Each structure stands twice: as C-alpha cells, then as structure tokens.
Image (cartoon, rainbow, N blue to C red; front, top):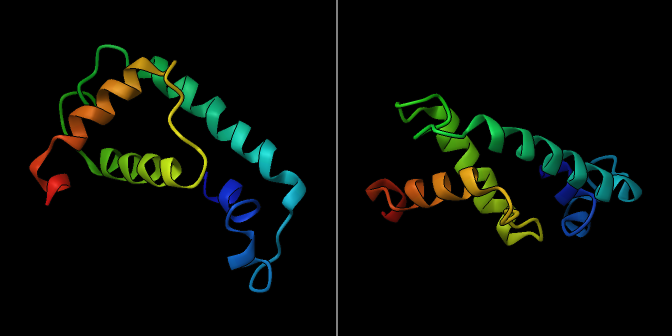
Length: 97
C-alpha cells in the first residue's frame, strides 16, 4: 500500500526525494489487494490477527488500512472478515482517543 501510494497519489511528495516508478503503482496496489484477500481468508473466525489477543500486528494493519482509505486504496468490501475486524478495532477506546 505504501509503495502504491508513493508512486501514484504521493508521487509529488516523493519524486524528488527517492527513486520512484509511477508505472508500477497499479501493480503494487494489486499486490496489496492480493495479500489482503489472502489475509481475509486467514481471519475467518478470529477476533484479532493473532487469534484472541490484540497485538502489534493489529495496530499495524489498522494503521495501514486506515491510511489506505485516505489515499485511494479503500478496503475492498468483499473482504468481510477484515471489514468486521476493522470495525472492532475502530471501536476500541484507544482508537477513538
């Protein structure tokens, strides 16, 4: 997601600072979606990424998905398990703070 952003919507911020490959943006976004689809299957029946415990994996995934939603990479509504997880995490007091 981050590389897809850097090479597309974020290109004006990064093009003069790091090597960028704008023509790779859509492919990189596709790779992110591929792995989110895989993760959606892995999340079936789980409360959190690692099962019943809220961990750093949940924090990082939430941050990336929230970021993605603001830079043209919204969560695919077909990913029902991740969407349900996202809403659970979003409702946590620490996220609301």
